[in-house]
Amino acid sequence: GDIESGATIFAGNCAACHAGGNNVIAAEKTLRKEALDSYLAGGRKESSVVTQVTNGKNAMPAFGGRLSDEEIGDVAAYVIDQANGDKW
Ligand code: HEM
Image (cartoon, rainbow, N blue to C red; front, side, top):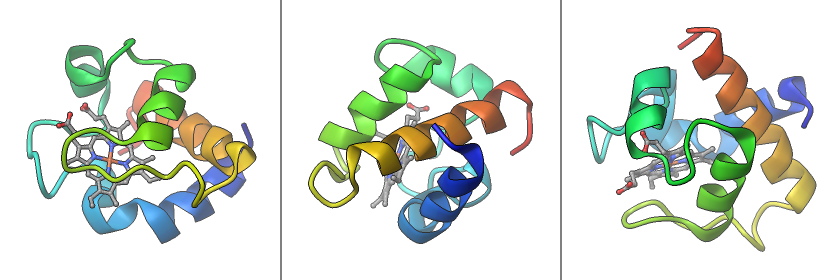
């Protein structure tokens, strides 16, 4: 995925709930390393983010059909890069 494109997609589709890598609905389920290790199904990797974004989970909506597979891959690459680099 293209991280730079992912940043733009994140700002438009994710930041409402995840600004700064936080989570306004489920406060502990942030997008930081330790939270992804603890809560993200499949663990802290791009393919796990792709699955969650495509299908949604609990109060998080599904983006499959709203974002293309390429866009979802890009935003997943961005989220993992941010987490791995402690950039949030
Ligand atoms: C969880 C990414 C949009 C609400 C997560 C997680 C990721 C993620 C990776 C797992 C975090 C963790 O378990 O620690 C994204 C991306 C989005 C997006 C990339 C945009 C494409 C949204 C939006 C909302 C939202 C718009 C609110 C309307 C939530 C909630 C959870 C969550 C409530 C916790 C789900 C659970 O395990 O119960 N998100 N998200 N997300 N997200 Fe999003």
